[in-house]
Structure formats: structure tokens, C-alpha cells
Length: 59
Image (cartoon, rainbow, N blue to C red; front, side, top):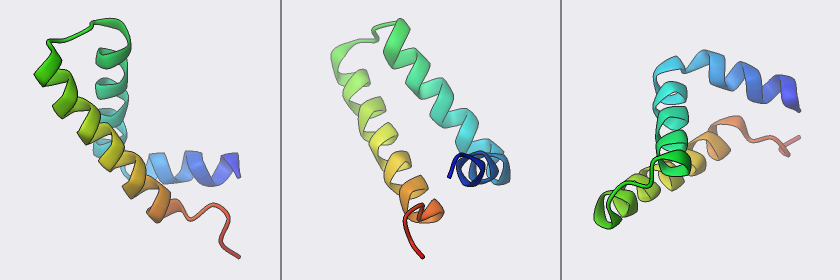
């Protein structure tokens, strides 16, 4: 399962870097409220995209 996640992140380096940057900015820098809502919505969208793309529990 972890190998599939790592391969999915390696296959899409631009989305992975945007995902990681967005996550760490929200986690450590505490941006203004409206900007953080937009960033959180983007983070959730990327999580849903990666979830569909990886399909970890699909046979």
C-alpha cells in the first residue's frame, strides 16, 4: 500500500509539491482566515484527486 502511495506521488511531482507546500503553510504559518479557507479547499480537492487516482483498496 505504501509503495502504491509513493509511486503515485512520484508520478505527479507538480501536484505533490503543491500538496506538500499547501499542507506545510497551513500547518506552520497560520495564513489569514479567507486565504486559509481557499488553501484548505484546495488541499481537500487534491486529497480527493489522489484518493481517486491511487484507488488503494480497489482489487
